[in-house]
Length: 417
Image (cartoon, rainbow, N blue to C red; front, side):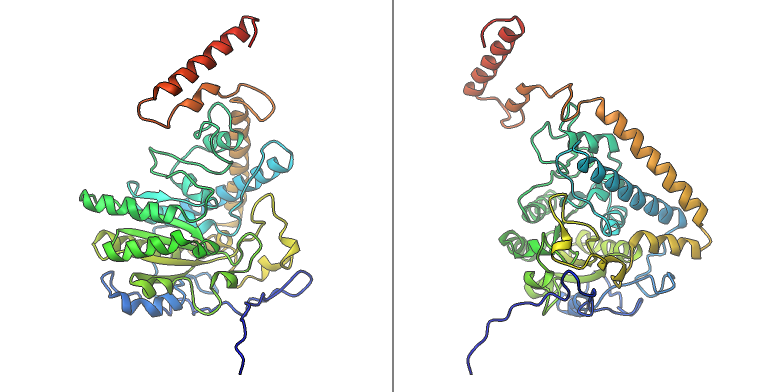
């Protein structure tokens, strides 16, 4: 018998009915919650099952229920909704030609917001480009995020990064990299350094499932295993890379979370559209890391409801109406209905909150534009290009900066440049 090359199949293409029969589900509340010091070999079932808290009627069930106070849930709902409204506004802004590029997190808001609530303020976060919920939950002003998109005089990255590549030193948000998966070894290295210094803070990183094919992913897992780095490594399995189905990244035969126990760290597979499940899983992994039991690889099973970015057209490679058919639903709607079931929310309050947040985003955009736009000033000082590279500026850059200053002075005086 001749061997055959296996090519992963795509469940549905444009014009076909959405097909999510390949998604392996567990009933809500069915997966056990072991102690945080469980042996790695005993987490295999956690990496193949699916941690879920909210059931079909939006009630919290099972051992993973984090039993969060209603105020915490309402804050989480507000931040997820704000993330979505911010995304929608920036998407429209890009289509109007007012920013050059954007990436939405539509359908994935719980992955970031719930995790941000489960982690401590001192924990170092290494986001990907679809984790704006982390920045919003950590209190980064919308104006600052917008100014980075505009590369204006208030740009936190001083015009050196693509749009959506945010960062914040005070809020412990590492700068986003356009090179995929680089944040994984960076997070592991940061966590190792924290452990060496005897600190209690841990690191957490996020990548998409397509990035698990990168060597940095595997290098990070190796170092996390060997040194028991206090880090939470998140794989956001939203079913699609730029235009490639998750099966091509290796998700067809085993879960992405199974890579954890496969190399010697704990693994969890979680309903990424369930705010409570993401919070519970992140809390468990963070407690495990802080107690010295090592890293956890969490796979968040979710769905990218929109395009990969404003440069992508998903209608060319998947059915247009897939999101409504996604079996794990909409994270915003599920948390909203859970709160309504608790008697802690209502449709009128939700509508009022949406209107309030729309106005908040609109006001922030007006303020952001006062610091400069793509077409109108004020503009960044070109001399900034010489800063933030060396601790002490070398002589050749000092000379170049002086030359630039002289040319600018001559231009301002009307002389030759």
